[in-house]
Image 1: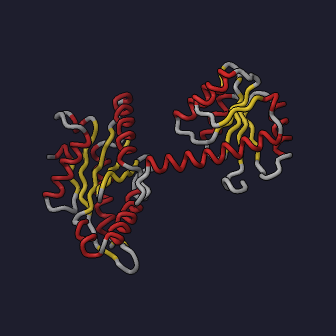
Image 2: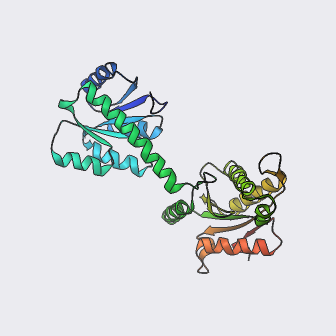
Image 3: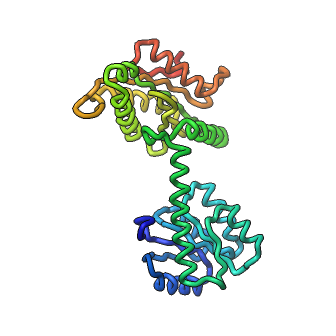
Length: 305
């Protein structure tokens, strides 16, 4: 897509085949960009395609058989969809307009008033606004140095996973990991070297956990990993693997500088390790402290204290 995104696929969710054909004709008349239009005729097909990813934007009809587009927007957003959505309806009532925007749509078009020009302009607007919102999300949820999720996201994800753990009677583990003697890196080699070490360690950690695990940086040289559906054995095994991973090879610190480093890790499992009254993060932190006190470069589980 010219100037906005490399992804040119647009999804139309509408139960009217005629609307699909009309939209195709509008797309052919666009002046400044070329898009590939795909169609879903039902709520169920639409939500699955939308959640499958790969779309630059979505055109969504209000009426979808027994269900409506407002419900689809809310479900998609609840499931983590970030595709910009333009709401289409035959109704011009103000209430529909407000309801669409409140549900998460980025723009609103009345079918009888759509022209090739207004549709193209709406797509450009939605794509640009979508990029801006995504940039703001990154600033709000990502650690700027390492690109990992930040402490706020760690706390949010952990709340959700604890609720899911209780609902489905499955464990959830937390690993707290701290680079040993990291202060000496900054003192001896400078903060730029320390920053590069943190970036390199973050890449190693993120590339060495399960796809469902979430690696975060929660401050300084401390990282936290949320592991859904992981019991003590799985979590400790993962922590030991990460411990070995860091000490196995020196960490690049900029230029030709390579630094041998080690990692101390504390493991706690919810709800098994919280029976004593400690919160899971407090439990993992106590295990991490024990790992540090016990000589560093090791893994300690709270349940073994």
